[in-house]
Image (cartoon, rainbow, N blue to C red):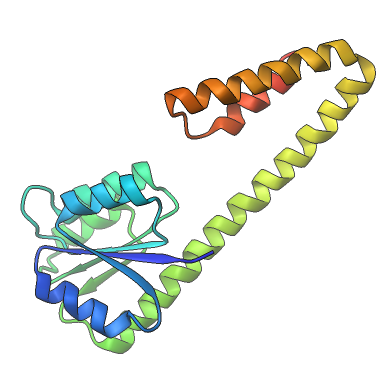
Length: 189
């Protein structure tokens, strides 16, 4: 799966610099300001890594990182700022739950190693999540197999309800449909 990186800053020259430096090695998207970043995440899905400036108009970097943590928790968050005072760092860490805090200007080697580490962190997060989901689904599969053997009529009703839950969730835009499907399949246990 392709790991995309989103860079957010209010300076188009800084964003162009990121693109020039990293475009050969990574899939990069840029957002001029936090509002554009939120729009991109809403419309084009999850990014593996988000690198954000701190001081931007309307929505600052900490507010953006907080929003990303709530709406895209697997995205690894990095703060890159020219204003490296202690209160900024504390807010970024405590509220944005960042992976790394970098200061501008950042030397290319440190910047590149941070991007690599953040991508690896994202890979680990998503691999763990996938493993847990597969393990859970395997256990659920076993339970539903037992239910289908012990009482086929009940299993049939649970299976039909699961299908209706999936259809209803799609209509109202529920993201974690598997939770509803799981509840439907296990409702008689």
